[in-house]
Length: 265
Image 1 (cartoon, one colour):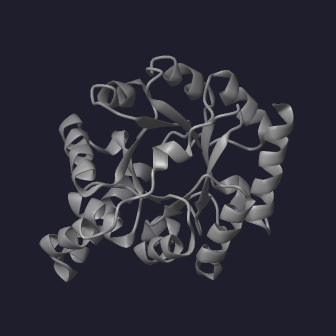
Image 2: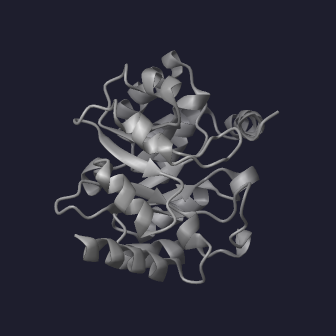
């Protein structure tokens, strides 16, 4: 069993337990009662050629440990906001990334910029749960959803008012996603089965995406050199986590990267 399959299997089991604790009708009602979201897509539009950064809060991952439960998630989110982040991504998967909906809810209460729920979404319950926790946007990974599920989940997102952020990693994902009306899409250059990085995926997949869809680069960004690379492809938004989280001061690391990107423009 590859890493992606293992994570998805764990999520299925965990969601089954969560649904026993809180009926889906109750969590849906909570989601529908939430105030309007902040505009996640608008926050990522570059007006001056500078890259908009979705800065990620994550405590650990299958490939790195950033401090686990000792991480001050809210403190890092506030540091990101102060340093110029356009939005905050919060890992909420508990088993492999040590995340939680509580982290997301606490961060949402603390910052004034859009918050993205990043998880392995395989059931509508998770969409309602994320919206009820305050998420402005939610990641939908095309690789773990069939075409019907992806379309259905996007419809549910729009009904409850949360922005769907569809992630693709290969041509098959792209074909699935581009058959649906989208406003933004993420290209992840990390193979989710092996966790290997291949930055050529950015060029390969972005070439087929209509200009009307805002593109976000995910994974493989180690500094301004990679930002310059995606900028040359017409991509001016990036989701970055590990580059910041592996430092002692994630906010300072973000500020430095934004300064370097600004200086080149």
